[in-house]
Amino acid sequence: MADSRLPPGQYIPRGLPVIHYGRVPPFRPDTWDFRVSGATASGQEHSFTWDDFARLPRTSVTADFHCVTKFTIMDQEWRGVSPAAILEAAPPAPGVRHVMIWAEYGYSANLRRSDFTAPGTLLATELGDEPLTAEHGAPVRIIVPHLYAWKSVKWVRAIEYLTEDRRGFWEERGYHNVADPWREQRYSYQEEPGEGPP
View 1 (cartoon, rainbow, N blue to C red):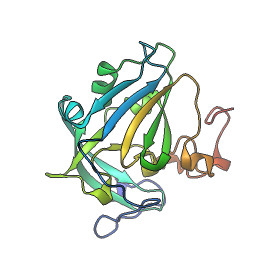
View 2 (view 1 turned 135 degrees about the vertical axis):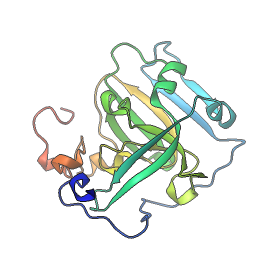
View 3 (view 1 turned 90 degrees about the vertical axis):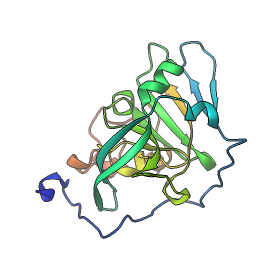
View 4 (view 1 turned 60 degrees about the vertical axis):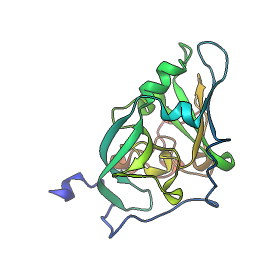
């Protein structure tokens, strides 16, 4: 039964709402790149062109999608690149415990490494059988289905490996650092000790 899969306070809407902060960026394949920086094993930044990124191993994930604005979309099928492929192509240093996901216009969201490498997490380039649309985050959107969807950043351009946690865009503005929808972790005032940076 679908209701048993709904986190507390969520509902199933008609259609797939589009919500984002700021304008939709243009995608220019000839100049687009994807960077991995911070505490890399080599100490160097890694850079991938669009063609490089498109050649990385592909996989698919079917998962529910939970927005903090209280809607849930069931059984979304995403295709793209797994975090494991990124970790292999651009290995982190041993002390990395968190990542910052960077998007166009400086938008960001932080994740624990365990959330970044969770089985359902994906750097998605397709939704269903079609490439992502610009409004849904094309060309690359990270999907972290077990967390509220502000962690599923649209228009991803970089990953920064972190040895210490740091709040991202919405987390700095009062959203919960972890964002577990089953625990209704919506706002920073709900954080328990250890759930956010010092």
